[in-house]
Image (tube, rainbow over all chains, first blue to last red):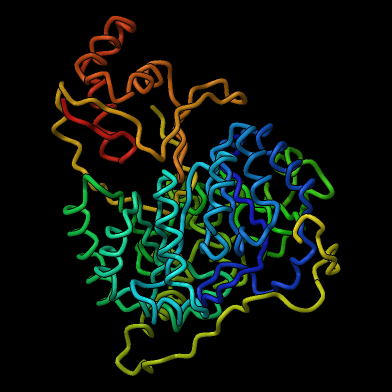
Length: 378
Length: 109
């Protein structure tokens, strides 16, 4: 067992946006009992002790946590590389200056499209102009800027304009990531999955831009795995390189793993090192011993690690099956049928999209989280 | 150099072919990249928003010289003097790979 390299700290699932492809869990109300400032500081210290080198501060919208500057400062003092993944709502210039002074290394700002009408419609709130302004602040304060775009059926045709926008705002990196179908994106999958023709056009645009901008910008394009022959090497292997801590302190190998029927592990009950080494949620699919055929005897078993456990579970109801994305999976028809539907002439033009709620309401229903307000959060 | 990506869901388009490193280029770390030492692993490391590279001693020595002042030729000769087992081509290839990944930038003359 190696030490983890990265911690994804999901500080809160509160978010001013309502994107229908959100990867947050569907039962948002179960995560309202957020860790306090003191608890997060301890998690960061324990993570660094365990070998973590990078800290990704995400959510929801991490800027909704009023203690964000304090958490960044602590992570920085521990020597962690700190990366803020934000919608940019709440990224005022004074706040940005405090984050800069606290040692924040890198800022990733999401945008939903290249122009305000579409971007604001997908985000569910007027936000485009504030995002552009925030990107300007990031550059002015001397940070490297990554512009993040989640791609799907409703914006992938705008890729050339999205790249032009990235160029205009002076992004150092642009991540163009096709939607992965977890959380709210799973619920909206059939409305979000692009057609093969859309993908082919997008890939041509990315290739051309890569050539044109090669000295100026790093373009990262994440293909949609539904159209792949082999599954993605999810997280570099289950509980191998990264761990996630959710707003209420649950520890997971990845943010989507909350959907799996595994016993929960919490930083409120156990030290992070013990959870990483021993908790069933970590050991369940670590290594290759858990693998069924065709993975077990596959020469790619150490290349893609059987793909994604959460995707296997969502599609088949069994997390221990081969990722159905793989063309060798006995369940591959589940993916093939979704792809076929996305390309059918008879597909309705506008399937409804269910936005994730902006704010979480109602009492927490998660075991151990009864809807208390976290003192560190407010 | 063993690369240890931590977010392997992503595939990067290699946006620079990586050929054409000139002896007079002055490499420096890209703004989003940090050279550091891992206390828990007791190894030099290169940190990036999406990945970590655990370095060996000569890799770290090369990157310490990527300060925008030393030329590629100077770095090659310095490494040759310090580590007699590191061939010149290996130093150039290491830098070429990092330039191709946008971890190291080149400034001219």
